[in-house]
Amino acid sequence: MPASLTTVLRSPALAGARAKARTWAEDHVDRPVTSALKVGAKVRSGKADIVYLGDSSMIHISHEDTDRRRLGEMFAEESGYDVAAYFGPAYPPAVFAELLRLIRPYQRPKAILCSIPIRPSTQLHATEHPVFGYRNARRTLRQAPRMSSLATKVLRPAPTQEDYDRFYATERSSRWGGQQTIGHFRRELKGIDATTASEDRLRVMWDYFHGEFSDDHPGLQDWVRLGEQARLLGVPLIAYRAHMPFQFGTRLFGPEFVAHVEHNWALIEQALKTGLGDGGLLLDVPPPPDEHFILPQDGTEHWNQHGRLALVERLKQTLADVIG
Image 1 (cartoon, rainbow, N blue to C red):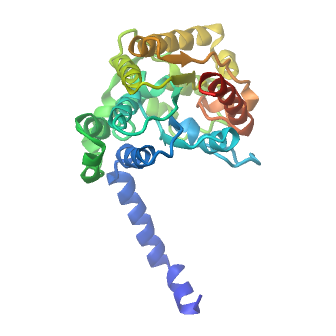
Image 2: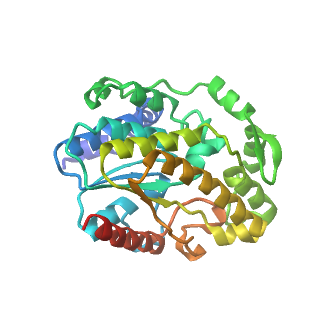
Image 3: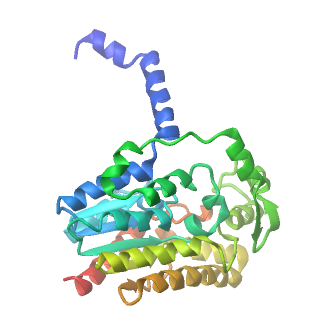
């Protein structure tokens, strides 16, 4: 490469322009919509044995992992199936349901895999977030009569300061923190480092992530609709829990932590079963040990290579039994 071109490519001005472009894309590109178009194209071409619906557990790897494959990539390579993966941080069941509706006219996949995290559908810090609540994507996908109509709907308005002000003012009831605003939790947790934080601060963070409880959260109806759309698609849906670090949660809150999250999962699974009828399978995957998580202290559903591979082996075995 000529020296002059190298100089241009490494220039601070170009680096700044790239950073601005990335920021603009993060603010305006509606990722669940663009991802739906990609998955739709793969399904339409007949190159998708499995449609894999997932959350941020499909994104993260540990800097200590020698196996650098993300969960979806690892599953595809280890199983030998062609996989169309639809995933993102806190992707909710509402967007999954509409994806399944939109691919119904195409060649059907052999099965659907679905991660079941608690937070994206029933925890206000996710559902009300100006970005990760995905309000625009939910509306765009729900209103789309067909997949091709999404092509002109890939941009969204950037969240405003007013959106964030409303988010911070949202009140939530939590198991251990009582009635507080989201802004209160965010202020308490500002600058926290899970590797060095005291257990008292970690309890606040875990309560923010996992402490909400509600037997009638509207997000439960999204799981019903997801089940209905899977049933209408006419292929088996295999769902599994996206576990958080149970052992560390029990260390912070005692056995009440397990009872709390088990109750929340039971609500979600019952909603999904209501929609599915007899057309699905909820895998009984036990909680992984803490050493299978990237950072068990932070309370997230993010697994290292050992956790990912253990799950992949279970999914492979199940799919062999279900579809051969």
